[in-house]
Image 1 (cartoon, helix red, strand yellow):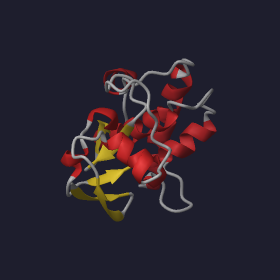
Image 2 (cartoon, helix red, strand yellow; image 1 turned 135 degrees about the horizontal axis):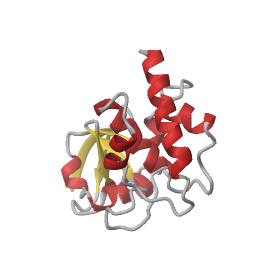
Image 3 (cartoon, helix red, strand yellow; image 1 turned 135 degrees about the vertical axis):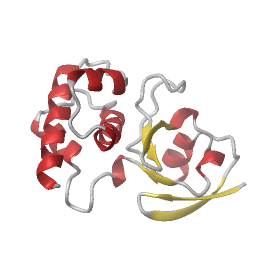
Length: 155
């Protein structure tokens, strides 16, 4: 089935089984490898992307639901050479250890900051529910607060 959407600002049409998880279309058809497979059950968050500005777990989102939507992956988070505040904060706070889950955390954080520009620790706990096997949660929390500061300065 042909399905059309915009991904990272570019119009795309794919011809795939409509029930294929969007994650596999992004990775295997469009060759955007930043979005990761973790659990396949929408539990860990490694596959988090934005669909129409909302953080969505792409491993359990059938591509048929992407028709006409605006999708952003980690590759589209920055604007050219200008890093998104979340990406800048992740670098400043030296967040990643193995790094596998970090694209999903960054996408979830970017969506959170659109909803809650200056999140408290409780806001972070209630909204960023991704899983990191390396347990870099402390550094991520610092980076989320730093990203909020950077975003405020850029506004």
